[in-house]
Length: 223
Image (tube, rainbow, N blue to C red):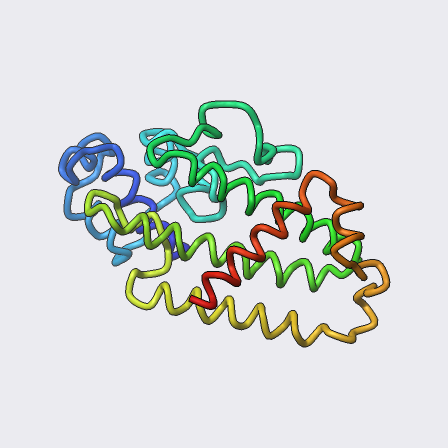
């Protein structure tokens, strides 16, 4: 059984807000046995896996850590909504206009960055840049998530101790791999040769955001 199973099993019970004793009763096992499952001391059988999936309303793949989606979906390009999709999830509130401005600066700048990555025609470059950015978002989300003692850290498969350091190390690895690609013939550098003028011309909607982001970052770096 994958090591994600105990973590996910425990997480689902806590998110449901029930005790281990209550869950064990509903799942038809003893509390001691459920405790062993949640701690990874013992492996469950297929029948328990199915009962647990039905009880918590998730897929077996999610329980086993094979899918990040509770329904067991594997995301495709079509499944992922656009960043600026209309809906309540795209509504920011609470801290004035600052989150809105910064979100737009970052999102618009990423549009430019990923278009350049596409033009580079390098899967490896795209992979490493994407890995770096994902790790940066993951790291900040995890720090903010940990602010509230009510948030269950079992959401993450990597233990809290050393997780941020691991994310930093992964980011540095991605950065080193990107630098290693400089001069590599697989990267079509002729397609990503740009200037301020060409950026403004090619990306009339996004270039100003990128220029503002660069200025903000360098101002903060100088401070």
